[in-house]
Length: 369
Image (cartoon, rainbow, N blue to C red):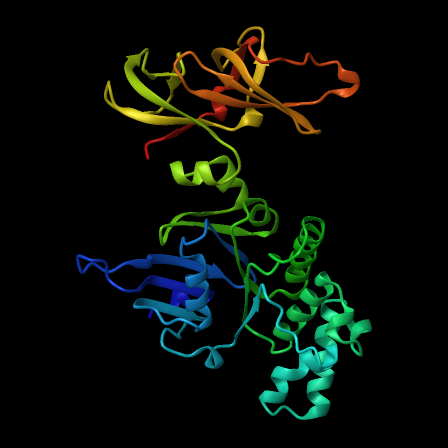
């Protein structure tokens, strides 16, 4: 075992999880060769669509599933084959699973009672955990007297009372309405910073992951596509999947024309696009991607911009901005987000209007797959 691994709260080394083989006898991977390190005190998120392997990965970290192969280290110690109760890890699920007949304080202390912690000590620790989530005032209430957000805080306190090295959160806000969900995102992130415990979070909600995480692992088809800070994940996607899954992204097929003045030229959307630093042969294909908020509708292109010509298809008003789907002569389209200016100073475009869309060269992403 390397000494480097001891500096991480969790380390996954070539972890795989297979289930039943397919009709040809080949194993079907729920998780396939995942390698990553999660730092002490980090808020780390697994993000991806349903069925991508994120929850299975979380369950293997927690000990609810054992890996088919590979190694899981907790604080540098191999726990790959240890059951959940022998790992100092606790989990908060989407279902709060609070006992309705017990008071809040008793709910939080229940796990300590199972471990035969003396009553006075477990009640003291349970009250401290309630104070950590700012719910000490509910100690004598029943769960039925609490709101959904309050019950979620109690579930967090019940996990924290065991003083885990790592806290796992499996889509814990899924049952909350949007307003409360956003409030809980900020509260839980602030709590994690205050406590300094390693939080490992699972969600399919991109905005939630970007809001809460120190780092994000984007997963698809059982594999990690990219691990990075939220800003890097959003602004520098590593591949086509990450670019398309995180937020909104325009993606156009492009063909390499050749080299002009030392710069690779591409043809996409009816326009020529320079790619500094690109190395591909003429005729090769790739994807040019750009965020809707990076685009603007202009009279003419400025320096270091590429210009696309087209006609407005759909025009949608969503309050903070207007979204225009601009159809290009080559058959593709660009989604453009235009902020609404005060007093209606900005011209409102209608379906069929001919427009020019500009994108800064620095906002273009060149993706080979």
